[in-house]
Length: 199
Image (tube, rainbow, N blue to C red):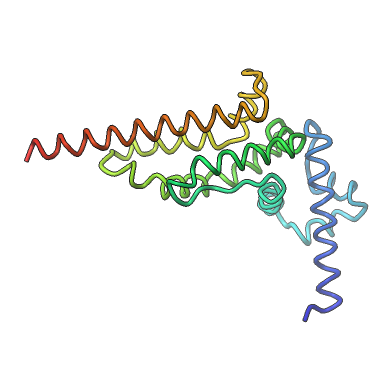
């Protein structure tokens, strides 16, 4: 059972994280530091440092919060890729201010960087059958394209430059992913038949 002290510790950490999150969303262009967050949270800077000793700790916690709030989920299997894009873009639409703040602020860029490694690993896994027989460079290129589609930046580009509605953006990104996967499947068949011919 959780003690009173543990509950207080968790509540203080959550309060500080809420203040940090609000700073990023409401003031994306302003400086982001332990001291700024401390002032916003109404606590001393030493308290903030106690819970988040380094900025990397803040960014890790904020990345986890962003994932939770924005519905960011990476596909684990090939069949999850297209549905996950729809879910992700719907969540982006529902949390537009938050997503745009993360895209536009320097601190948000650091938060997003925390998810890049996880995204690479998930797309390596979910695309593994379509990546068989490809060089390391080709695998990186394919994975990077799918990571691009599965990003707030691509969502923002479709909406702002493409002037698409939320539904249109989902339809467009789903179509692009399906076309790419179909092309990879066709190439897999051609690669396989060329190998058989050489034997």
